[in-house]
Length: 242
Image (tube, rainbow, N blue to C red):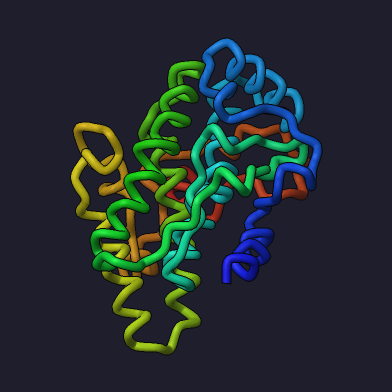
């Protein structure tokens, strides 16, 4: 079972730490000086005009690596791999390299699924995502609203795609229950005063009728060829121009 899920995680660019060339440990990323150096390098590589744009683009990628993969495994397997920051490194190809022996499996066993879910999401957000977004905000001076909506957009996407292909009623009910829990969780789950995702989470008909974001991720500010996509599909700026 665990090996099968590890193979599934490769689709989210999660690999073992001996499978790729590593660039920066996530514990180092939480250091302001090292984070600044990393974002400056990001600026050059992706042709971002400033640190805020670089931080936003990185947070979108990091949300895919850590948040999307965890929620996918929750939905599909009722089993997730915990990613402590001390066991994670970012590769030069922007993959998440993990130390398998330090990433523990979290399975529904001698507890209710609701209790298990709370533990999984608390570990995911309070211990991992919140500290990473905090250092990105501190280093780049980007709005925390943009960073958290970048996370929410990934969450909306993973639930939308999973629900679209699901036929099992019990599983559909579980997916909706998990989404509603995230939407209505207290700030404590994130180690914050308020739930930073609540304003940005959308599912079902609401997402279809109003897909636009509240904040702009600033993707359009990257230097790109004119033939390439200039705005994200759910860009609030683009939606006002149409």
